[in-house]
Every structure is written in C-alpha cells, then in structure tokens.
Length: 291
Image 1: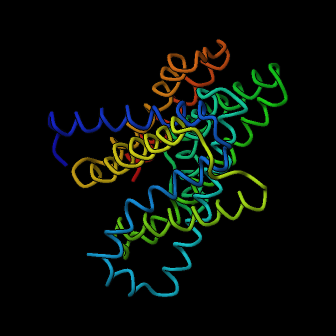
Image 2: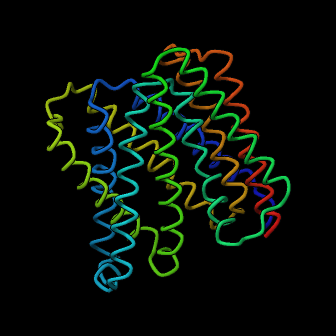
C-alpha cells in the first residue's frame, strides 16, 4: 500500500483520541460496570441495525448455520470482553487495565504460533517483554491491594476474550460484510449482557441524565469515531499501521485518566505499561514482516 496521506493520518489521529477516551469515561461513570457494557453494545446495535435490516437485509437473511454459529460465538466472546474489562476499570487504574487489555495482539500471535505459523526471533523477544510488563503491573497492584490485582486479572481475561473474538471474526469476515458482522456481534453481546444484568440484579435504567449522556458519548467516540474509523482505514493502509496506532490507546488512556480522573499511576505501573507497549509493538512489526 502507498504511504498514508495527510487525510489518512488525520483520521488515524482522530481514531486514537476517540478510543483513548473510552476507558476513562467508562471508569468514571456512576453506572454499574455490567450495565455500561450492556448499553455500549446495545446503543451500537441500535445505530447499526437500520443498515443491517435495510440495505444489507438480503445478506443477513442468507447467512448459513456455520456463519450464524460463529457470529454468536464472537458476540459471546465480545460480551465476556466488555463485562470483564469494564469491571476491571472499576478495580484497578485505567492505565493498568488498558495496557493489559492491549496485550490481546500477543495472544493472537501466540495462537498463530500454535497453529504452526513461523514466529520471527524479535517477535519471541517482544512476547517475553510484554509478558514481563504484565507481571510488573500485577506485582505493583498486588502491593496496592488485592482488589487492584483482581482488576488486573479481569483485564487479562478480557484480553484473551477479545483476542479470541478477533480470531473468530477473521474467519467470519471472509464471507460476511463488516456491517452485518458487527451488528450481529454487538446485538448478541447486548442480549447476553442484559440477561447477565437481570440475573445479577443490576439496574439498567434510572440513571442521572449526565450518565446517559456519557454512555452515548462512549458509544459515539469508541464505536463510531474509534473502531469504525479503524475498520475503514484497513481498506487504505496496512494492518500493521492500524495495529500500531491501536497501541497508542495505552498512553492515550493513561493521559486522559490522569486529566479527567486524577489517576496518576505509580512508577512501577508506568514501567510495566512501557514494557507492554514496546513488547507488543515488536510482536506486531515482527509478525507482519515474517509473513
């Protein structure tokens, strides 16, 4: 692909800023974590449904059993990701939680290695460096509180879930359009999260207007200006550039959390964050080159 122009770089910058606000905004909401996860997916489904049920209706109706099964599986994994990650944001710092969730790309590369895909030497080093970063953060949080450590572990589960979601999605996207796929995934995740909320006795209504406005803002920024823009850019720039840009969410979210929430992570967490950032970037670049 050609060198990205000014417009493409501007879109990348907008997308990075948008996703960087997601974690801090969700962490600061006076809304139960599972309810936040539900509404983010529910609102995204409402935004995409008119397209999926309109211009894409024929494609939606032609999905085979295999595709439907994979889409439902992807939606369940997405529900697990959001349920654990948003809960994690309430238990540990935004910087730690976001950095550990971004470890997802390492899980995807590790899965490829398990399938027999050759892993370049630098990628192996990056894997170790990123893993050390996770261990450093969890070690620091353990010294802070058991609650913070549990938050780190939930973020780690969230990273595994979203990595599995990515792997499943790669298979489905061979035959299903982005709009239909994301609509069905978000819808499945929303239904599962709603059921979880109801079973757990979590209130999904009755919030202050300010909280509703923030929920809408999270959906518009993270989903539309963030991930949707990244999906669009995959058509014009290399996946490696998009993957590297996504990693900027780590320092971006930490900075936004420091400004909005007054969360200044300990030096140890910053060190772990930088290790995850450097290690994951090495994995992304090396894995791409080796192919």
